[in-house]
Length: 311
Image 1: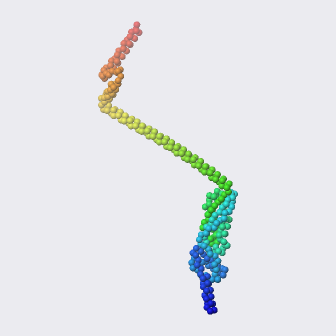
Image 2: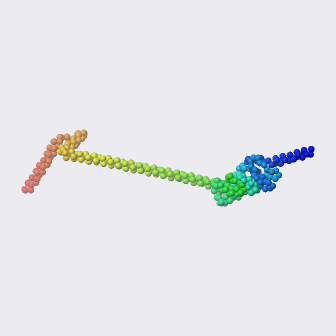
């Protein structure tokens, strides 16, 4: 009986030892194993074996991305404005051994380092810059924390400033400043719009005057062209008349007769009662008689004057 009990106890002890030597690790975790108080290895996801009693679990770390809150703190900007600020740090464990042995508590260390770095960064920026350049501030914090966390086997994936609170008096002054700035931009926009409208109006008037001047110039050119063509036509007509007259002497009499016929036609069309139309031969005779009469009376007048002088 004693032998069976002893054998049973040995088997039970062996089963317990074997059970303790088996370690099943989740895929999202890493387990740091120490052997006799010294780092031995890091277990990854799946079935792993260790030596019971000799090996022990030092730490179990998750590989998932973790968040670390940056506690709200009061900081002073470069232009001496006291503001409250907080944020969040996102990080992942990349080296389980370094995260276990190089720092006591990497989360607490990153949070305190973030606070210190945040005070330093805000102290080098004015209030307007800290409020409007959050993205720049996030990048600076990520770079500063990343250099230190790298020695701890931690990767800083990103940093987000979640809230920046300013005193109520400063906030009121900022609102007034923003309202004044908006009004200033509105006035500048209206002034620019009026300026552009005046410029466009002036350009339109200028184009209109240019078009008018071009139209007048074209009309003058057309009038000049017309006069030149008329003068050329008259010149050509006179040349043809002269040529015809040089070739035929009766051509001039024909032209004179044509003009007389036109004149008589106009006289005939007139409604005036004080007119008398005579043939061309009669007018020639009257013209000759008038010339003869004038000669006769001049001779008679000269004879009377000579008789008076002799007496």
